[in-house]
Length: 365
Image 1 (tube, helix red, strand yellow):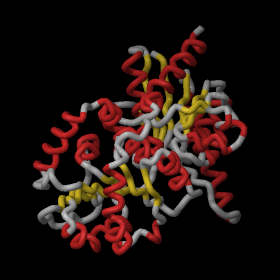
Image 2 (image 1 turned 30 degrees about the vertical axis):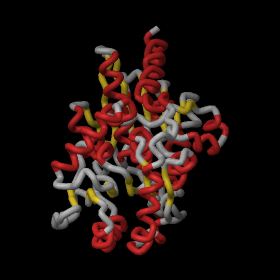
Image 3 (image 1 turned 90 degrees about the vertical axis):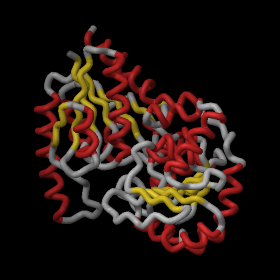
């Protein structure tokens, strides 16, 4: 068997692409066996066990944002996670990394063991682990064109898009009549009127407090204006009461159908979300999470440039702002269904997978 090690962690933007690429590889070569490296603290704890892959959990070593005593503890954790990585990588033939703190020690260990490395960067602004990895391999792929401004290694990176679920990729090829049928079926199942425009608001699997608070405060006026609201509040949040025109849900299992049922999306602008919105062809109001290095705002810029989205800052997104701008947003949404989609970027799992297959051929020859 050919052991391929996938590494990434912390967020869906690191883990879901890894799963998509791993599944593509296993479906195209029965001799490939994928394994995953993560930590005990990220979303991988929920997602990876479902794959059936061997799951290696190594010590998490988040880099301290300030110099101080925390730096000593970080260096000790990096040393531990490096030796853990050395041990688990022995006998592997390829490492494919998707970022997150957990990736850095695996990249270093792979370089020491002379195992080929492929990197995928999900965000428009690369994180520090993938910045490190880009110095250890020439095989760097990116989801957003904006990543090319991050430095020389990134200028030469291959733009492949974001590996996302196949049912969402398939949305762009669904006929208008079939879209209408899915929309009507979904809305009827939620006791919503298919004749009304539909707003879908969500903040990821755990929800987003800001988005939840705004829609709660704005809901009476939104419903009075004749707009359906599908609201994914997040798994750990209390589910509001369902009322006419308003369908709250904890978590969306079938995102493709909800995208098809929606006219306007309001969400954060994580890497996976932006890729899914692009594939769905739906117009979005994006409220970037104001933390990190500004990657969420950068992620949104490709959609904005394509006329598929508008950005509002987190602090400016209020109930008053939403009710004042909702009709204008819905009008933009009704005229944005034909913005161009680069179909090549809808198949990132295959593009990265094919690169991996070429690497494996070289290793075995």
